[in-house]
Amino acid sequence: MTRTNKRLIVVSVCVALVGWIYISVHYANKREELKKQHTQQTASLKNQWNRERQTRKGEYRAELEKAWGGGIKAVVKDPKLAITDMLRKAGVTACPEAMRVEVKADNFNEFDVFIHVKAPMDKDTAAATVKTLLGDCGKYVNSVSFVYSNEVVKTIDRRGIDAIKDWTSADLASVAGQMYTP
Image (tube, rainbow, N blue to C red; front, top):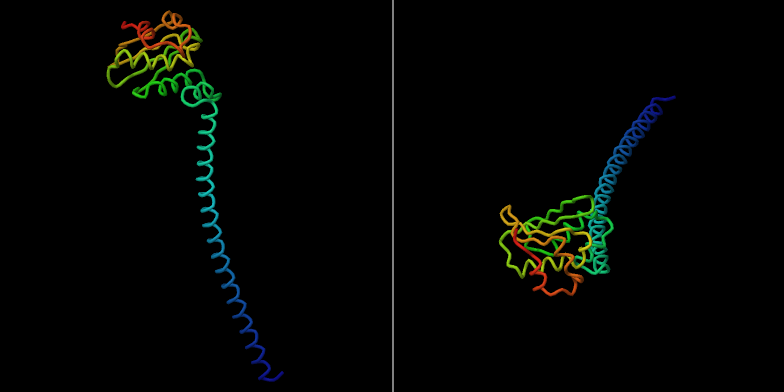
């Protein structure tokens, strides 16, 4: 083997080694770049899917509530709610002026609804709220009380509730007549 052949072999091995290192580094950089793009694209798609899922969930819920009749009827027909939760949501729906609605259970199946209001209510507004609430929830409710400044200002108990046979068609004067101030 001549000196030229040895140089040629050494140069060829060096060129091959440098080429192999260049290709390895280039491949590793390209792989990292593709991995980064894939991670960003996956995160973007995940965010988009979550937004779409939330939108579909809201649309489904609105359609379901509409099918159930909307408002209090939808709250009453929601099978996911316990009776106390149903009455609480129905109270909030019936009385938008309410700061808070409490439901207390007596004797396991008698539910007292306490509607805490921000300002004193006139008798007609209270009667309209009671009529709306008891129109769909009357069979569950033992009493409805309006609370202002931690004091019960108006209430209707079981006797007053039973005195009106059909809450959906009751006039406000007869509802107001059944309410009293303790």
